[in-house]
Image 1 (cartoon, one colour):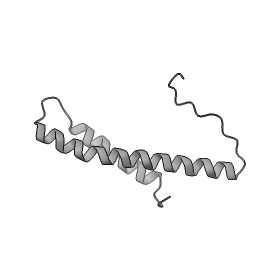
Image 2 (spheres, rainbow, N blue to C red; image 1 turned 90 degrees about the vertical axis):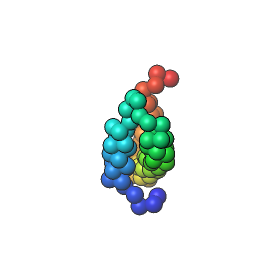
Image 3 (cartoon, one colour; image 1 turned 45 degrees about the vertical axis):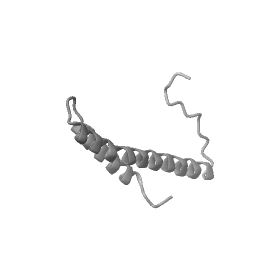
Length: 77
C-alpha cells in the first residue's frame, strides 16, 4: 500500500461530494464536461484506495487469526 490511510479516503470522498454538489440540471456543457473530467479520475482513485485498504485490513485480520464472514454487499445475490 502507498501509505495512504482512511483519512486520505475520507478526504477524497469529501472532495467528490463537493464536486457532486456542483452538478445541476441545465449546466453549460463545458462546465459539465470539466466537472466530469475532474470527477472520473478522483472516483477511480477513491475506489482503488478503498479496495486497497479493505485488502490490507483483510490480510491483517487473517494474519491475526480472525475468521471473516462472507462479505454481503446487500445486492440480494
